[in-house]
Image 1 (cartoon, one colour):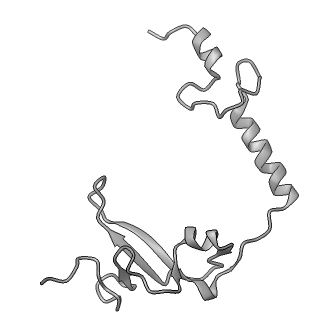
Image 2 (spheres, one colour):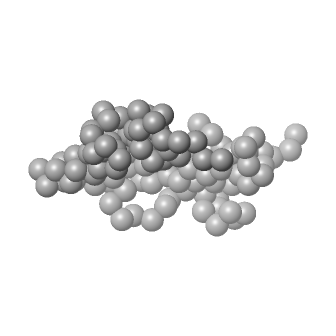
Image 3 (cartoon, rainbow, N blue to C red):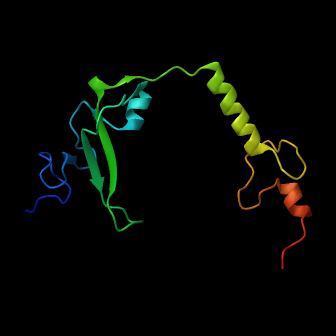
Length: 124
């Protein structure tokens, strides 16, 4: 029986400990898993990784793992951050042609709201 391609808990082949999907030890979490628990990496280096083969790419995909006990709480969302995010989202919804809030993020390939795109002459 051969050894799995991406199994390297000692970090000899890949430089850092490498595990298979769902085989990482307890206490090592991805950024998403940390965020779901209200935590962030907090500047700590990557402790390990999970590698797997992707059907879409020739290169293997990677998910980096961090120590949960070294993670810090997520910074609070301030009123200034909320206002800046609301302004950025409003800009993404505002049509540059008619200057109305479309109520949805404008499609990048059109650059305008759907009614303005329908009125525009077709480029030949």
